[in-house]
Length: 255
Image (spheres, rainbow, N blue to C red):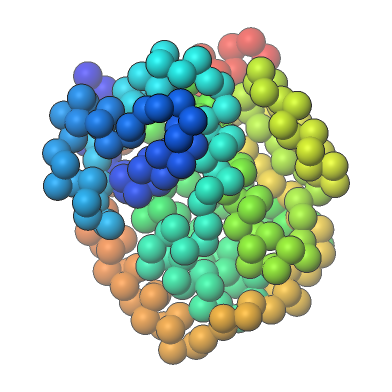
């Protein structure tokens, strides 16, 4: 068993939202997790976590039983800023969009420990770069890259009240069978197989510090920052570098 995936704990709340995606397929996500040995008590707790190895197995089972390639794409559309618990609360409490993105980048390990987020600014070009920090199957990687891309896109629209759209989204995964869904985003250029290593980047133009947030609250932000710092201190940093390298080589071998 992959030591990293078995030890790394990730929030269960995101994967429970798959129930909305799978409604027409007649699959019960909670029941599937039960088949994987996840206790029902875990599913009822808002801040519960589960081993990432279980997530990898769950994605594999869902692909086999539904034959759907779009689960990550669809899940990302259901996630909102408030989905991220205390990190989402902190994002909403920031004074402007740039500050909110710096906040989530600082505490992204509390959102999705299996990935890291870097937020960078070059003149008026802003980039959100998500990369995996643990090994996972190709199906699981594709699922998460699409989910993260869609969630980030829609959440920035939410934070900016619909005024800001990405100019370009670059994904490392090959063009998926449901790629025509991306064509509905007419003002965004999607590039598949465009990253040198596994991950996804979203590009935005303009000064995001000039985009105010409607729920800005200095005191609430201080409280969220304090709670996030306390939670980060409890997160164990466990890694298997060789397994991560093996995954990276596998994903870039065709390019």
